[in-house]
Amino acid sequence: MDAIVAKPNTIFRAFQLRRYAVMLLALIVVSGCEGKSLVDDNPVFTAAPPRESLTNKSSVARAQDGEDGSDILAVSFSAAKGAPLLGNSVVAEVNGTPIFVDDLVGSLRLAIEADPGITPEQQQQILHAQVRGRLDSFVEQEIVVQALNQAIPADRQKLIDKSLEEPFQKVVADIKQDRKLETNAQLDEALAQEGLSIALLRESFIRIQKVQGYLSTLAPADDLVDRIELVNYYKEHREDFTNEERIRWQEISVVFSSHGGRDGAEEVMAKVVTELQAGSDFSELAVKYSDALSAEKRGDMGWLQRGGLADKDLEKRLFELKPGEMTRVFVRDDRFDVFRVVNHEFANTTPFAEVQREIEQKIIQERQIAARKKVLEDLKAKATVVTMFDDAPRESLK
Image (cartoon, rainbow, N blue to C red):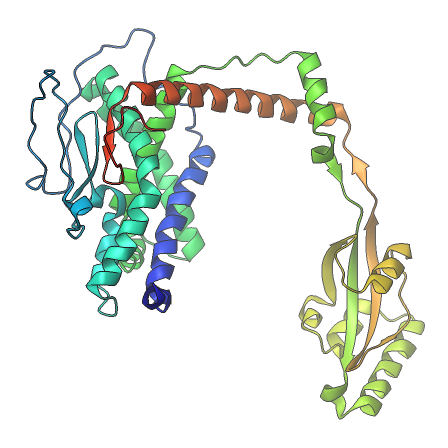
């Protein structure tokens, strides 16, 4: 594994892939599709359509009817016997439906196989680790997708996919903005360097949306919250609605080495003090005299909460100042510092009336999450799942 650690570019690409997976999940909420109902009150149930895979199924073990008459595939995982993982290697089966390496890590596999600096042994180590890390989540999705396929006709699913195109384009627009790109062609070119594409992002986005949407359809949550529950939530989570005391501050720092030594720096700081006493603006003097990086921001050091400074004496003094007041000049081993407090906000708890709507939404969201989790657990309990990491077949995914 030491050799793998020495390949930061490859590991970085793996993190990039994970980053976009996280981005897709985050933007589900932004796109406004979370909880979309995928079926009407009287859905037409049909048999699940055949599974379409981008990978070659020739390596999948053939179905073998057991003595009990079960039609579940009796899978044999070559990877478990020491054979290398390939794109079409079966790593799991959900109710007899195979899951391939490329279903989980296809883009990553292509990226690492294209890197001449990674040995075949290292490629396998990375693939095994990535498959193990992603498999349970993908299996859960597959269980829900199969239930959805059985409940919703294929033609209606096509309409659902079409309705998700607009929110997906919002995702694409946000990614382009994040990466400062103008066109889809530019984005595809950039993603290709990481083994990704817009098409792959679309596939992941639609799958996640449909999974979450179908779970929400099966698990409607009560959206009525009484006042007692709201008040109790406010009391139990009071710290969430309380702002900590903080100050906004500025600095002017004159470094000895920037002025030929302590004497030169002392002359500069004397000018700063004289001009401050004459009424000059602290921000302008920071730009003019300060050697700190904060000079580019007119001396601004941002917001500081109690306990945020290692120098407790300085912190104590800063929190004692009123907005507009300055400290004395601090003499350090290598510089002179002077500070000014710009604003001082004291600890404050937002009144219940102002956060009542927010609390209501939080409670409803927690109910929805709990309801979807319960439905998912019920579906998982009925599923037959076998993976390459099992010592023996298991009847349900834990």
